[in-house]
Amino acid sequence: MACVQLSNVGVTFRIYDAGQRSITRRLLGRCEAGLEIAALNGVDLTLEPGSRVAVLGSNSSGKTTLMRVIAGLLPPKQGKVVIDGTPGAVFSMGFGVTPEANLADLAYAQGLLMGLAPAEARAKVAAVLDFAELTDHAECQAHVAPPGIMSRFGVAAILCLGADIILLDEVLENMDPRFYQKIEAAILERAAQGAILVMIERSRSLLSRFCSEALLLRDGQIAARAPLADMLPNSGAALTF
Image (cartoon, rainbow, N blue to C red; front, top):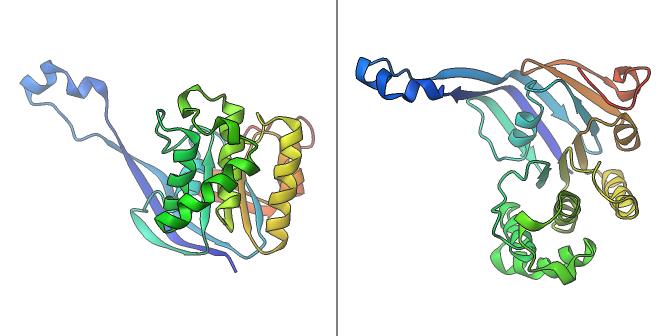
């Protein structure tokens, strides 16, 4: 069964100021190494089989960084990450997507990323496109596909490729209603079988349909963890923290 364990996890990014790369600064010997920003700091988190967790927080609170760590896409600078299961992540900004690649190639690449052997990943491409109802668009390149199509394709891919740790970062709101219902049923069925679901969304209605608990991140740390109903504001469709 899927399980996620993060112990004292820290992630830092180095921010470079464009001004530091100016010719004047080079001549004066004032080029600095950049500023380190802590995106995650001392995060402890355990997700048991069947967990359905909303990740809440303001911009730059560390939400997407946390998702990338769980997905295995970003190694922490400190701490320990233990993942038991197969993570599958879909990011609204298209993290890792080559714009010129077509949907068939992206399905194959996603399979490789999730640990499938090349032959197995290639054999799954047709199933991914069929589930996404995009078989006729297999040659469509990512950079010309509408955001809704890419979201639909991404979620279909991780489900068909066997993810049991499902990570969704603001990808469901722009999906057409008919296909959304298909995705919702598939995700909840997978969660009932023990899969872990972690979601970032601004819509409280979406989070309420999928998640039973929530994490609140502030400044790269988990500020609170509680049932979702206790964490949501009393009114309004959009979440701001």
